[in-house]
Image (cartoon, rainbow, N blue to C red; front, side):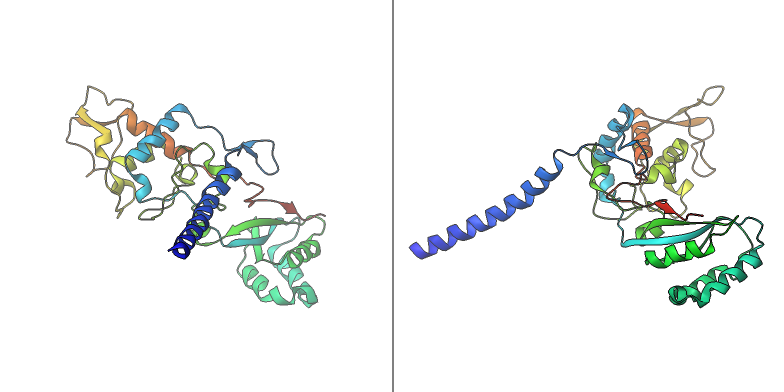
Length: 294
């Protein structure tokens, strides 16, 4: 009996300490989090939401939007893009021939096929990305080699991964993105697309309101339910109200009536527009970090 109690007590203490560590560790680490600085800028991130968007966060929560949408962009890693910014007096075919002449360099041996393929059908449009690699030394050597008077090539650090490729954001989500969220609603199911950057992808408030009222009117085939109870259908006056939705045929109400968003609908739309996780951060960089030097 005494031995059994000792085993139980030891297990209880071990499990309790583990659970305490799992909760207290992140709490200690993040409870003092403050606005961070955007890379290569004096701007702070994130910006506090407007009052309307803050109220909209609660509308988002009350309507269970987090059950079908996430607010967390995932990322697999980084790559370096080598991009031609200016061509000077070179013609595309001359630059292509010049780059091909560099293929004898041992440092570029592993990427010659990729470079040749990217320039094969190039007509001279700029900027032109002609190599994506994870090797910083190869990228740097290529920029150094092609930079001649009148020609400027740049290196860009970009995030990669399925979510990035879908256009859901330029980088992974970071803890700083959620500083002003109460509660944090990262979600766990993607019945619909991730919304961490929806304010950048769809910045039109009228689009957002139309999507809430009749999702299929702006996204054919959408499986999102219509949030029509957030709108009022009322008889129209002699002239349409300025705030009335402009809906496509088949989604508009009966002739003589109009759809007016309620305060909750406008607040929810304001919250969605506030989701703009597109600032490069120290812990999640993504855009021009360094460039080739003449």
